[in-house]
Length: 264
Image (cartoon, rainbow, N blue to C red; front, top):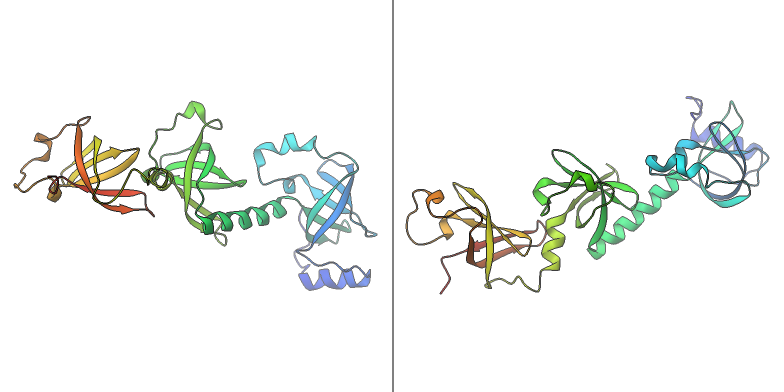
């Protein structure tokens, strides 16, 4: 539900002062739902004018709004975010969605600070990567940060381990990495200088990509050996298992650099 275009926060404050209400836009208030209407719910927040909770402000997850309708019954008391005042209907516009959004970002900041590994539900897949649910918000895992193949039949059923790469609240942007989480979980197996065996999954002119404990490592052509290599495709085949030494571990990007030159 929209408020009048010319109705500013100062107008809102003046109106509330007129009725001696100690409320401001952005306040969190307690209220009791007492009636369901066609486009939302009426809420008693202890003021002379009713609060109104539009259907679109019920939850962050639009896919379950219809299911949420049956959860909001008369006499349910909970917290609401005070969005605005609608002068036409003389109602205070409330939101649960905005409250969930604020609290979700607080949890995300804590997850980022503690570098926590998440288990997030995959909600869709596109050409660029996977969309996952993070505290009720949409997060994106680029294809370059995926270590698993996503079966579209398992969308909304499959969970994936991931870590945050970028959390920008102002832009409402969440970028995650499955590689970074996998590398963190395998950190006890992966040490610089350690000799490991991996499977070749891709061959390029500049080097080969090897899967090691679910992590992708790059064996650059300069690290294959001391001899000059004319055609890398004549030496290796996809599916081959080869032994390499770990040169560098990029924890932030979830990548490995490996070599065959330093194997005794």
